[in-house]
Image 1 (cartoon, rainbow, N blue to C red):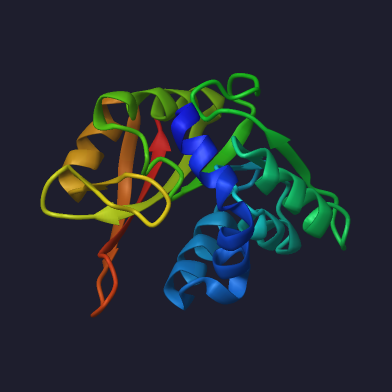
Image 2 (image 1 turned 90 degrees about the horizontal axis):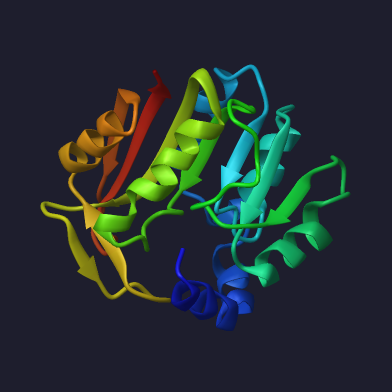
Length: 202
């Protein structure tokens, strides 16, 4: 995430958190998908780009060991204050997805839920490589994104984001050392098309 994106989210962190920072704002299909994915992992999970921390806390309350990381300090402060010691002990950290502060093979799953949508297409390989590095062999990645017919920028509510066709993103994951195992798409009137790809590290 670039400094420009971090600044844009920092300026609107309170607004974003109020609107989207709880599981009540999550689509039921997304919750079911993430829950099923997490249930198949056996080791620690990383919520990469955790935002206000609601997914991190949800996964922890399902019995998973999970760490949340985000580049926006205001999000991490909110997550620590709201979720850090409510009924589970969660580790929230400030950090970049382009240089994750974790050891090689140290996690069994990476949830990247809309956390790479602001990476320009030539730069998205950076976080994908980092996800692969921190995953153990056979570890799982679940990546949520805005789906579209072409790789293209659009005016996201906070800062410029990018749509991806599923085949284009799947090809990049393959190049980064992942095997795609499942793909989900969803569209509804008045909402941008949604995509999710589940992959495992080779």
